[in-house]
Length: 127
Image (cartoon, rainbow, N blue to C red; front, side):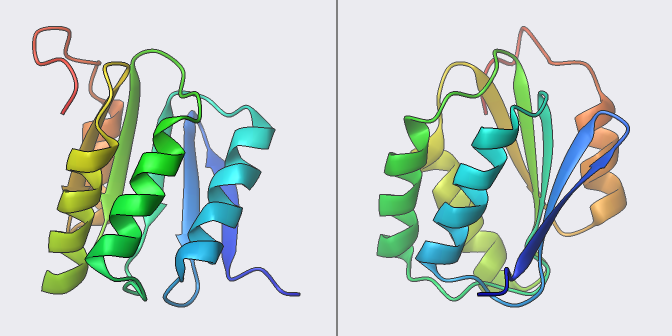
């Protein structure tokens, strides 16, 4: 079975890029693959290809992935280009919320990388 995603390391940012819209099983496979690699605190999820998930599926996925350990002070940026993917990702981020990490959704990859490279904002707390 071919993976529809790739995981690469760029300096201290781990990038997860999907080649086609993922379904919930694809998202879970990428998440478990990422967890097994013990990567750092900065993660860039490139979802510019869109989603193949309902809002309810993403809520369930968020609840499952919430239990996976992220290092303290982690930052997760998601790039979502179309309006539907952007909105659904914001819902996912709200449901996925935990005290150890900050999440932001972007339409522009360069802006996402710039945000990841900013220091973790202790005053802001999780987003």
